[in-house]
Amino acid sequence: MIGANILLVEDEEKLRKLVSTYLKKEGINVFEAADGEAALAVFSENQIHIVILDIMLPKYDGWTICKRIREVSNIPILILTARNDESDKLFGFDLGADDYMTKPFSLKELVARVKALLKRSRQQVSDEVIAIENLVIDKKSHKVQLNEQPLALSPKEYDLLLFFIHNKNQALSREVILDGVWGYDYYGDLRTVDTHVKRLRQKIQPMGEYIATVRGFGYRFEVTP
Ligand code: CA
Image (cartoon, rainbow, N blue to C red; front, side):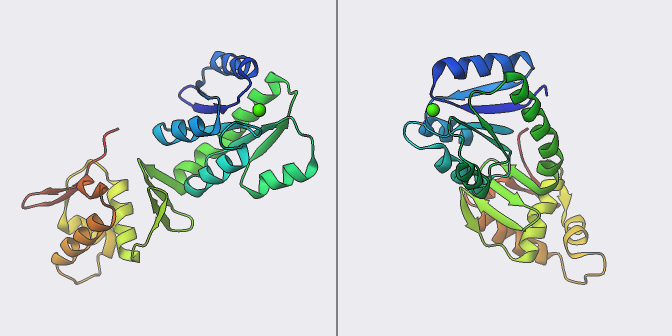
């Protein structure tokens, strides 16, 4: 649990502080938000691993936040609500919520569910969704989003982007890239790599500068940890 970042969205200060204190005791980092606007801001500025989300909130309600997060991320969302309505629950699952708790709830149970969600998602997140700043790659659907907008990449551009990400911060020769992306039996020339890198850089602007040229050698995808 150490190192997990939770976004806790709850406008009732007393309850928020109570939950926050309890989660922190479990070694979880808690980012608090008291309204919908703050929640989305915190979410976009931090690497959040799980969201605990109240529904009735000032500014944007929990449903809106759930929807907005789901457009860019697969992280677990646990809905907290005072309502105990089956249709609400179904609506929440429709919007992509992973779990649901009705107030009043036991803190012990909340922590148990958070732990279960984190455990389940850790594997999934590393396998299926890669996020580098505002670039989000869903490996399952091959969908790429930049700044919450879908990004149309050709299959080779997609493969190239993934190859760079899997080999980030390493100088990669054009030969290595050609072999890695196009395969050993591909007889194209090395300029194929250059033209694809050029196009990929343009498409992922302003992140194009992440693909650094290594003079006389190849390229390096630079990501600061
Ligand atoms: Ca509320």
